Length: 133
Image 1 (tube, rainbow, N blue to C red):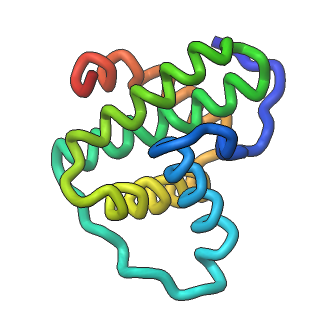
Image 2: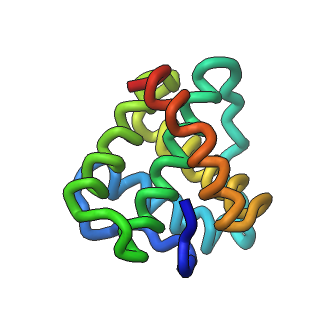
């Protein structure tokens, strides 16, 4: 899949509930995370770490595809909901899951370019869907 233009990640703040909370956590961790000391990184391993990575990739990819006009609002909402469902495999409270997603967003966005993330998403999405949905 080729993408004509990429825009910076902008969390979806117009949705209510858990996806909105994840987006707020990502935005605040990206904006404030480097200036303000935050809680220690959560350590998530094994299958839970894979689920977290898949959820974060799907969340970022669906946001970018929707903002670029490649997917409909319905597809976008479905992908965001699927991302949240993947977090059922991650242990912890809701707040801990939000913190973990924020940390994963930071790591993904600081280590890879958006085209690299989209390529990784294309390569891993079938496995992620089969394994965690």
